[in-house]
Length: 268
Ligand SMILES: Nc1ncnc2c1ncn2[C@@H]1O[C@H](COP(=O)(O)OP(=O)(O)OP(=O)(O)O)[C@@H](O)[C@H]1O
Image 1 (cartoon, protein in one colour):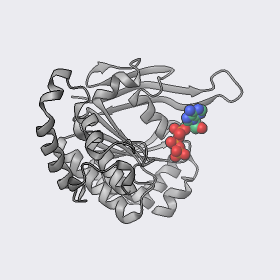
Image 2: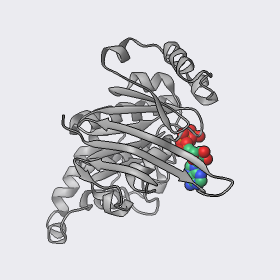
Image 3: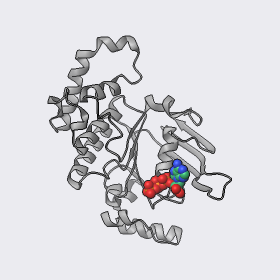
Image 4: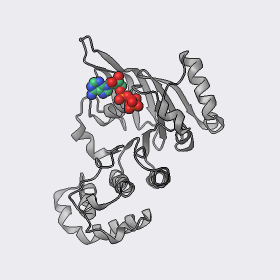
C-alpha cells in the first residue's frame, strides 16, 4: 500500500533523565495514505502538538522512524522539510508576516523551493495567479494585494495562511487548532476553505482540533490520543456512523477513565 507518512515506534521525551521527565509520545505507529485527511483529538497534554512537531521536524524524536513519501526524514531538521510541508497554527499571527503586503506574503510561499532563475520571469503570471486564488476564497482580498497583512482580521489572516501553506502542494499539511481563535462563523468559513483546498490539491492532512463534532464532521479518519498514544483510530463506515457520545464511551472503555477535556466537551 502506498504511504505518504509512516511513523514507526516513535518516542519523544522532554527533560529526559531529570525529575521532570515527560514521555510526550509513546511507541507511536501510524501509516497515512496519500489524500487522507486525519483529525486528531485528545485530552490536554495528550501529545497532539508534539506529534505535529515531530512530523514537521521542529523536534526530533528520541527513538523511532519517520518516513515521508517513502523517504526517511527522521533526522532531517525542520528547515530542510519546509519545502514539502505546510503548516497553519492556532495563533493567527504565526502563518503570515504582518509588516509585509498580501502580495509579498504570497510571493514568499509561491517561490518557496523554486529555482532563482525562475523568480524574475514570473511576476505578472504570479500576480494573476494570486488574484485568482484570493478571489476563490471570497473575502475580497484579491483587490487588496498591496495592503499590509497587519490590517487584516484574524479570519482573513488564517485564510491567507492556509492559501500560503497549500500553495506549493506540500506532501503533508499540518493544521494545529487553526480555527480555535476564531468566532464560530469565521471558523466554519475557514474549515470550508480548508476542506476545499485539501480536496482540490489532493493533499494529505493532519488536523488537531478540540472540537469533537468537527473531528468527526471533517476529514476521512479520526485519531483519539491520550498520554502520547493513539487510543482510537476510526475511519470509513464506522466513522460515518459514530456519534460524539459513542466516541467518548469508547475512549472510557479503552482507558478506564473519562475523556477529560473541558474545551472539547464545551464545544460538543
Ligand atoms: N517544549 C516542551 N518542553 C517540555 N515539555 C513539553 C514541551 N512540549 C510539550 N511538552 C509536554 O509534552 C506533553 C505533550 O504536550 P503537547 O503539547 O504535545 O500536548 P497536546 O495534546 O497538544 O496538549 P494541548 O491540547 O493542551 O495543547 C505534555 O506533558 C507537555 O507538557
